[in-house]
Image (tube, rainbow, N blue to C red):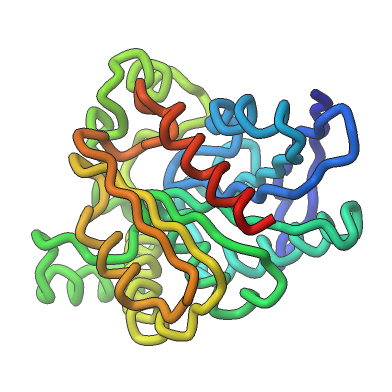
Length: 277
């Protein structure tokens, strides 16, 4: 396995960190990992260690304001900064790996970024896997709270408004401890602007999600407390893909790739991708 890393310029000329892992031989396909809120691409080593020995290349990027990338933590001017930067990286990968099938795997906020990306660029991909996608507004967030957040996003866009329930990421205490002690993970409050941009993008994806038609797999932990787990079925019903699969993992928490039984999830994902290959 070969590991490479570097920096690219985002659509706003911000320094964005990327890394990738290559198999010993020419890869049979490419996996593009899109990470979730407050974390970074280096937290997907279970996925890397599962796929690269099987002949896949895995590429990851740290979103603006995340991980090793520049920018105020968990802040973004517009949600499109995520998708436009992802497109820049995608085009780099396409240049490095011409004609190879590329599969997007997006987790949590990365699932929402992935869904938004598919609405613009699905024809360039061979398929997508969205894990615990943040595609449905949680039930406890009222319309009044959303309106207040949008006002705060204009007046004080960088103010902190809410925090992730860290214990909900995995049922494995070691994963939670590693998350808390990871210097590249941000454990503070989400900014008002990003919170509002998330909600705006959820509304956009809900309105236009039926335009998604490429092969798609949606994977969800039944005991997810970070995102609304009903979003998985909602998204599955929404998309127009003829080839679509949904897997609900009973008892799994939010980070299904980091649960004790993550091997089952990764095997399911690999079998699904290899059917398409």
